[in-house]
Amino acid sequence: MKLLEDRIRAEGKVREGGVLKVDSFLNHQMDVSLFREMALEWRRLFAGEEITKILTIEASGIAIAAVAAEVFGCRVLFAKKSKTKNIAGEVYTTRVESFTHGNISDVIVSKDYLLPTDRVLIIDDFLANGAALAGLCDLVRQSGATLVGAGIAIEKAFQPGGKMLREKGVRIESLARIASMDEKNGVVFAD
Image (spheres, rainbow, N blue to C red):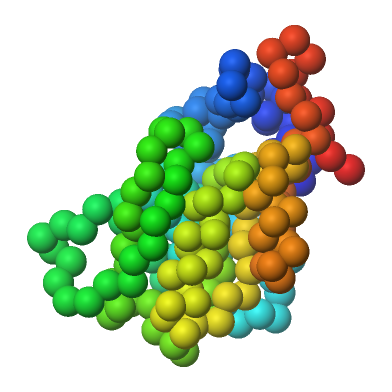
């Protein structure tokens, strides 16, 4: 998606350790009009799939997923990284390692909100090593719902996550795919 790639070129900052900072428009300060354009593109890519639920993981993906849910006309559900007092009853749970935070979290979704009748589209801001996306796919599998696919804002195609999950049959539609990046040369997009 040229609009997203242009924003990454203009405002993204490559940091040591394979980190791409896009917090000026994507995951700290948010450009909701950009999110709407992204959501419209995912709706085009997943046309005819009859999405009933959008699933994401806290925290950076929530805003993007919320805008996408509005465009798709469905509800958004986010996997929480800890069980709180306001989640009563049974939950689906899986373990996810965070590339950004360098930790492992148990993520949960209430069984009340992810049903076997759901047709789920996962939305997230980044795909790198694939742990978060794999964890969300596992939650969908546990629920018996149908996983339609995943809409990813930015995929680091030089890391193994996208290839690994595609080989497992997950349909992934990434709006910007990065072939390589470093502090000196910046970002190079995949074709």
